[in-house]
Image (cartoon, rainbow, N blue to C red):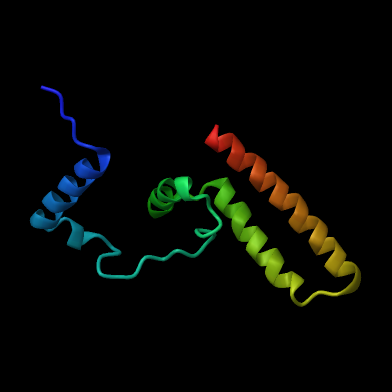
Length: 108
């Protein structure tokens, strides 16, 4: 017999079962707000869950590291002027292009 439930239904059933068994409460993040820092909002929506799972497992994808670097460069840019500002703009532009290429490769 084939199970015709959707993935969302499978996930909901699994979460209900784990909640009933107390397994969810043993998670280190139980009862705490989700941390969406570290480039989460810059990550394409369709990749967020996968990247979050990898992050929780201790693995940080190179794309997330690149997004963190972008965030740091943008923060530096706010206080830069002159030649330093132009160099930061060039670095940011280059890194943005590299991130876009990597994200397109992931999507395809």
